[in-house]
Image 1 (spheres, one colour):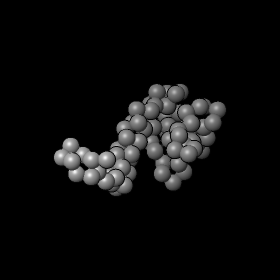
Image 2: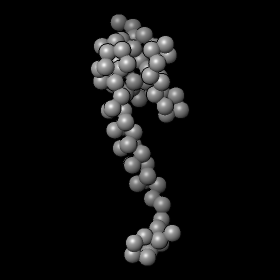
Image 3: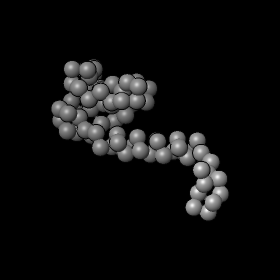
Image 4: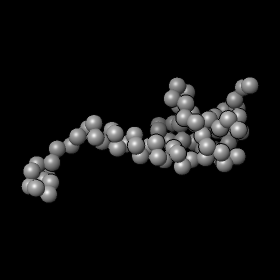
Length: 77
């Protein structure tokens, strides 16, 4: 495959990772708590999206946020 100048096009894994992270961050910003419609905080350690207002933590499984209340973990005080 070549680019517009006719030079061979090489896959840049670092660029692909940056693009993926940027897209993932943008998608996470669009998600809101289905109960309160408040913004969510991403917890890297637990791989959950946390709604402080609803006191719920929604799991992320295989990179997919599970935004079902019945799947959420209730946060302790």
